[in-house]
Amino acid sequence: MQLPEITKLDDDVIQVKIAMSYPLRWVNSYLIGGAAGWSVVDPGPRNPENELAWEQVLQQLDIPWSTLESVVLTHHHPDHSGLSGWFQERTGVPVWISEIAWSEFVRSWGTGNTAATDLVTLFSKHGMPDEITDQLPEHLDSFVAQVTPPPLPSFIMPGQPVIMGGRSWQTIETSGHAAGHVSLYDPQHQVMLCGDAVLPQISPNISLVPGSDPQPLASYLDGLSKLGTYEVEHALPGHRRPFGGFRERTVKLLEHHEERLHAMLQRLEEQPRTGYDICTSIFSSKLTLHQLRFAMSETLAHLVELERTGRAIATERDGLLYYEPIQHQA
Image 1: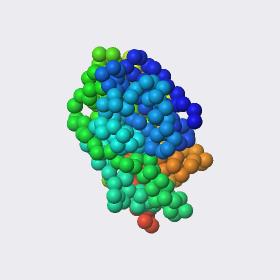
Image 2 (image 1 turned 90 degrees about the vertical axis):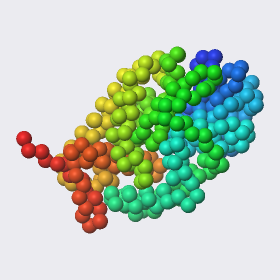
Image 3 (image 1 turned 135 degrees about the vertical axis):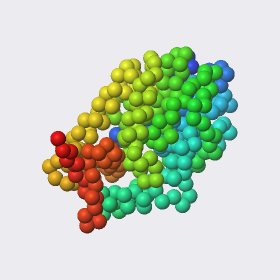
Image 4 (image 1 turned 120 degrees about the vertical axis):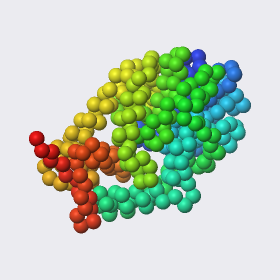
């Protein structure tokens, strides 16, 4: 097995690329620390290959397991949180996560959860065909192995700093990509561990998910505006490579979503459409089921925002919801 790519960003911050599924291919995990001990940020999804990868990484870096002090999770998604329970079993270290993010974890994969059936109901109401929704429960169940065992969490309270590598990191809780998402900011070195809140080159997925944030795009845009106020020299994202121009990137993402809202509104002006109609007209027709799930949830997040801002309205016909623009008088 090939050793994961390791990049020493400075003496105390190391980027480790942990494998995940196509199209992203890897998630950025970070080791923060030094002689006094190490913290792992977002260890990646659990599978035997990634367990071996971490064994090799720590051996290569000469970091004994006994020097690990904590695991810190930016959010609950499996590609970020999955190995946290495994790390905790190996070391007994605390796993830090926001209380909201943990509730999302339990809602998604906890015993007796109804996340799959709730998503089928939502997508069906918005026009997704049965031959697609019938595949969703098995698809969602496939992620359980990536987050097993779940950790025993320690909660990051709003505004609570997190100590990693002897440095105090401010916690900035936002929503949109994932409810309770936490970015970590070191003001002394102007470093932002931004998880999936801000990514270079690609736009973080913003999903409407049953039982979660009912207005995820509005929450995400608010969070972007908040994050854009920080002085950031080095941004360390969950995917792609570390980047500069953090504030400018937040502005670009704000513009992207306004453009996406406008594109959807234009399609509604042609004729009333279901969420699935809009999804298939905006996104590629060559999506995997995993990609289509995210595309559909993102479409619905934008349609909800068009409703919230008084630009569109949803009406029910024959058991399906159709969206159409609201015509404002001059």
